[in-house]
Length: 121
Image (cartoon, rainbow, N blue to C red):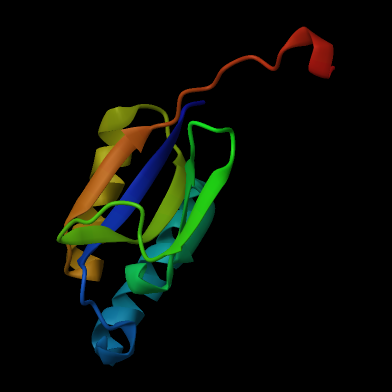
């Protein structure tokens, strides 16, 4: 069965500690509903993008490590679910519920599975 990322987008300056109790309960209720339906594989919230560490490969083969998000955007992923759904329509239906519970934009994307190389077996 395909798996989908349901990602919640927050503005760059989002402060999780300011979330209302009602919103937190709506998110918990959605998690309970997903678990009961047997679709939730994993769920997690992320710390603010300002806490990120970005790593970039360099032409000399090294890696540059810097503080802050990799991309400078107005929105970042603030949390996500990994769901196992029959199809994208079902995943989008869960995404609709996430928009309401989280009071934030949501993106739904299917995971691409690639076979493990034979030498890794």
